[in-house]
Image (cartoon, rainbow, N blue to C red; front, side, top):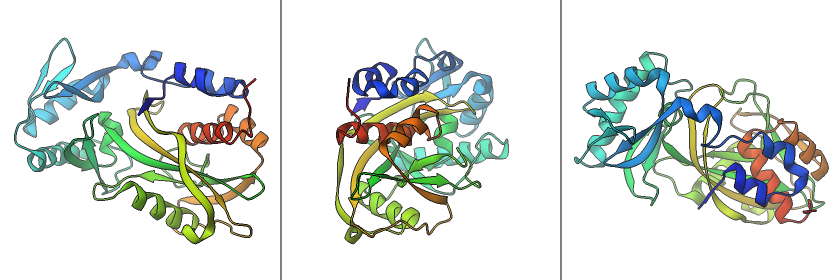
Length: 286
């Protein structure tokens, strides 16, 4: 896994993407100073917004996860196993939801993992950004046979980044789901596509990136993004099925560069698109 820091982007992406790179936020950005690490059994697993720190502490204590402030951050101890930790996080999550601190509640569970991939618990998907837990997601960059890029326009009803450009398919990996199952589920739900529609699809170079950054609208985005790219067969077109995509656009590589630099893509999708265009040599380093 690679940490997608601003320094890494600077060294990896072609110079054409410099305006995008210059605006990239990571865990060293100024806004990050507003957050404090949350640790479980000594391992840093979350990022608490200090403006809600006292509330979070009260909620976690009430849920049975006793919090102690240390020089490292806010520390909790838990030795009862994943099922008990999941139950305590569910209690805390429902309390925070009632306080209006967990926007975009989805009634979907994702895995809370250590950096080494050990499963610690499951928790409501929306809780991950409120508490800065690390989630996992798949993003898929798709081109047609002429090298133009299929992009989705996020529906106006989306909680996050409504109306912005996105990869053709992207989504979080649910607690009981494999990476491949997520890949094909998202392609079917968001674009109406299956394996027969593709000339090829494969992992993108720099397959797994860890994004860790404060969000402008509140909370922290800490996620392993697993990247794929593929090419549709001639005559195959996307068609949304789940209502989360407002429209599809076919864009030239140069139009994608302009849109990425103008921040018209979501940050995750912009990074995936930029890396794919650089990997397929449609955008060359200078």
